Every structure is written in C-alpha cells, then in structure tokens.
Image (cartoon, rainbow over all chains, first blue to last red; front, side):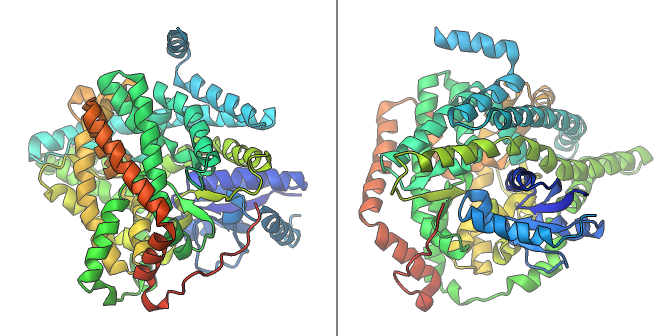
Length: 100
Length: 480
C-alpha cells in the first residue's frame, strides 16, 4: 500500500499546517495508513496540485475553490473541538482512495 | 545561585540544545508519551538550526545591498524586515525565551484556573514568542530579570483582555464558536482599530460595498510568497544597485538579489514549519491534561486559536493583499521610518483579521484602517530596530551580527505591536509611578469590561452587523 499524499493548508504554510500534518500522521498511523504531506499557503494550492499526485486537502485556513480531490476542514481537529467527528470523516474519505 | 548554574549550563550547550530540552521537560510534565516528547524536542532543535542556516545565507546577500542602498541612493531604510518566523526563532533562543516557555504556560493555565479569564491561552502557545520579545528587550536594556518577567506577564494579561473584548466578534465573523484569536501582535493593535472603526462608521463608510472574491481573483498571485519575493527582490535590487545599472555586473547583482528574496520567502515557511510542529504535542497535551483534570470539569473553555484560522477568508485575504503595495510605498515615504518591509508582506492578511471582523467584511473600510495602522506600526518597528538587532546578535543569529558590523539592522513586524511597545517603553523607565499608572489603567479597563462584558460584545456585534444583528443567539454545542 502506498502512502496517502496530503496537502495541509494554513495561512502561510508554516505553523498550523505543520501541526496539522503531524496530528494527521499520528491518527492515520493508528489506523494503519502511511502518510506524506506538504504544508502550503492557500496561494500555493493551484501550483502544488499542478504537480499532481495528491489524495486530499486538509485545511485550517478556508479554501474556497474546488480542486477535484476531497477537501476537509481540519480546524476543529487541530484545536481539539469535535476531533472524533473529523477522524470519522477522514477515515471515510481515506477508505475510498485507491492506495494500490 | 540557581541562575548562575542555569547561565553556565546555557552558555555551554547553547540554544540549539536548551530549547529542545525545555520542550522535552514540559511535554513530559504534561504527560505526553516519551516518544512524542522526544520527537518534539528534535524537531525544535532541527528547526532552529535550519533557521540559522537560511538567515545567515540570506543576510550575507542582502546586508551589503541594504548598506549600498543607504549609501548611494540616500534612501534611509537600513532595517531589513526578516519576518515573524525569524523573530520567533530569535525569541525562543534567548535565555528569557527558554524560561518563558515554561513560566508563560503555567501562568496562562493559572489565569484560566482562577477565572481571571475564560480563555485557555495554552492552546495557541506557539505565539508566546510575541510576548517574549518584549521581555528580551527589557532584559537587553536594563539587565533586570524580575522586571523582564513582570513585563511579559503584564503584557500577557493585557493581550488576554483585548482578546476577550474581541472574542465574540472574531468568533462570529470567522465561524469558530467558543474560540478566541489571541496572537499578541494582532491584539496589541486592537485599540487603534476599535477607535478607527467607530470613527469611520460615523463618517458613513459602512455604506460602501466591494466584492472581495472578484478582486482576489485578479490580484491573488501577489500573495504567493515566491512571486512576491521576485517583485520585491527586483525592486530592492534596482533601487539598491542604481549606480551600477549601466554595467553587466550591476544587473548580475539585481538578478541574484531577486532570486534570493524569492528563495527565502519560499523556504522560510518550510523550515519554520519544522520548528513550529515541535510545539504540537505540547499544545495538545497541555489542553488534554487540563481538560481531564479535576479543575477542567464544568469549566468554560474558550480556546485560544492560531491567527491562521482566519487567513484565507475572502475579505481578509483580499484586504491584506491590497495593503501590500501601500505598505511598500509607505515605507519609502514615511518620515522617520527606517524599516524596509519584506517578509511581512505575505503576512499582511493576518493583520487584517481584526479590522475585517470589526467591520464585518467591509474591505474598503478595513483597507483604510489597515493602511493607517500600518503607519503607526512602521514607527514602532523603527523605534525598536537597534535593540532587536542587538538581541538577535547576542543569541548567535548570524544575520544580525553581519548587519551590526555593516551598520544596518534586522527587525520583524512582531516588534510593531503598538500596545506592547508602549507598555515596554513605560516599564523601561523603571519608574514605579509610571509603571503603576499603566497597571492601574489596565485594572480599570479590566473591571469595566468584566462588569459590562455582555454589553460590550453586543455593541461590537451591532456596530458590525447593523440591522442584521439578532441578540443572544445560542452558541452551538461543542465537545472537546
């Protein structure tokens, strides 16, 4: 099984996105998934997606456009509000990915 | 005794070991698993080292250029803005900073436990560097550790008061129920925005409408740090090397500066991200440990959240992008300004969160408020440039030492926090009457606010939303 490729988005692709990536990695590892992530600012999304290969976007700064891959609002997950709900949503999205 | 042992320990091992060690110890204190605590510590150490690598490379290219610009063109902007990421790495590397990682965390939990505030600030403990810089300033200039800590704790309390005033407005506008944006560098400018917002409403500015989404589509590219680096680098290269533009070598230098600026802007966030992710475990476990303790039961939790949560909102991002060109022009025009804005530019949308939420997304009004406050901020940053450069050089920050030798400075807009800057000036006098007066002003505002909290929140809601305001909306149920 290949790792899940995630784009973590926050304001400048620095603090919150890095924290988000490390939390996502922990949760996915608990459920037996590997993950690779790129931390990015909203302005860099289009360019990163142009290089392709990403499975999903998780954000703490609102992302408005549709990019053709699942987009998850991870704000609550990051700050600790309704974490479980997000994890369920994440696992559902992940279960639909083709990771072969 | 304890201090001298700590000092010799510090001098031997340096910040690249001390900061990680501190993080490890506090992680364990809050019952994080050893594996996670160790990973955090390593990340912080690696991130700090990485920041040191880039900034010294960056300083080596840009310092001579800034020096040349000042000398040959007469444009007196010798203080290069190195951005919040670099300021954070300097702040956490100072001895004051290493101690405040622990002291600040405990103090903030305590303020929440004794119900001085309902905001649980440790859930955004990363931003504590923005308090630490002020303690470091006082320590640098007065060498008084007690006063440095008194100043930091006092600024922390003032910031919490301001954040609590704005809490309902910010959380309503950005749709984060029971959250507060506590970043000190934004809340410190809130008094200015609160006054300007009322003033501009009286002038009838609430009637002006502009659609942020369509403007953003046209100018969105300038918010991409890499391209912003190209534009500012080119400008800096041409202005700085104006006298040599008739030579091939002159243009070679312009090209080099352009790509260096772009590279730094693209790479900084990545490395700073390593550093910042080392704070994840600590943030998580301090919250969990408190929540599950007997103190956390039935206690209201207003979570402090990072300013990134508001960054991408259309009106916020658009207003910030529109301030970028104004900020660059203002830097050259404002009398007395010595700061050359660079790394702050992609961060401007963060600074617009308070005016944007106060004006309920009115981008024209927010833009005007943002531009006016930016003038005050450049003055404040100019004022502290020398001291901050000395602090950075003392922590072994190469770019700062290079700058000092060349007669230039480094600064970040974290040092442009108007409220914290003024409070620091008051504390620097070391005059008990002046300091007492400042504390008394805070206490008066604190008592007034606590007595009228609902009314203040309702007033801000009503002034932002006008007739659309419905009082006493029940807040959504949340579980933590």
